[in-house]
Length: 409
Ligand SMILES: Nc1ncnc2c1ncn2[C@@H]1O[C@H](COP(=O)(O)OP(=O)(O)O)[C@@H](O)[C@H]1O
Ligand SMILES: [Mg+2]
Image (tube, rainbow, N blue to C red; front, side, top):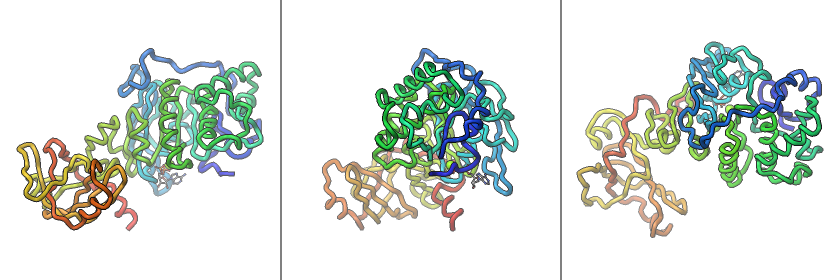
């Protein structure tokens, strides 16, 4: 049975993790008065269009939030403003402070300093059970001896919600996660993705206004994870609840989010839509963590771009040409040698060492090349060409790879 990681998730509203908790424990933490069946305020617009705040009051606001554990500054001053109905992700490497931030929003941890507001109310000192939020953890565990409906309705039963109301809400929650008709099955009769959706239903049955998800797909294999990403996003759009989603997987964050925050060492480096963060990273760290970093700086920047600074260009924006290929007015180019070729089926990744120093990664679709042909490119001298407008200037600082090397020398 997986152990809850830190703190006690059972002190949270609905999620039994591990063995069934003492009934007193759950009753004690959940005031029955909050079970009035309140639904989140639904705006008439589609929640999917929520790249910007839909109502004047944010669902969640973090104001200079810090958290220090002994010597470790886990969260080093984070400001966030998450709109009602938004699918918001916190993306970053392991140890960057995502879970700690989520746990402070849930109320499991108290900030060392700073404020947290939920729907405009300062909840900084408010315990988890008095916050209108629920959490889905990565290591969710269903009770194996109970059927799906009882798993989903367990928290409501413990809180003595009457049978008919409970059945109604369980049916509703199962419908939301597209498991209508599965109520009678045991967890062992479900696929991994279905079990994950039961865990989600168990949180949704409480009708929170904000759902916090901490790497909920982490235990699933790649294919299932990709399917669940699409499912989760669809469910979120349908129910209109604010989702705050923690992940270290950039593709996951780009696929699902209306907006995301990129975390690094307890700080938020950039907040924006997936396109903002991918197409217009503002720091070397973001450029490297969300995508391939492809930095040009120092001598390479002077030689290729013609100016001082740190620049990046995305691998798919670069084309590989012969050394004597013409370069248009609106293009830049650099000579180099193909050091390595990685055949990926639909496309190929080339690592090119530049004459000016440094290297660039280039991805090309395999439109009409075979694996044999691309592999023969190794060692070839080429000219890399890209549009000037695809060069992005970055603020200083180390890239994600350098950061990693610095921390784990
Ligand atoms: N309860 C705790 N006690 C001491 N250090 C902690 C505790 N929780 C987290 N940390 C530290 O805080 C930092 C951020 O951790 P965490 O928020 O879990 O990161 P992430 O979720 O991004 O992987 C890490 O260095 C971690 O070791
Ligand atoms: Mg974490």
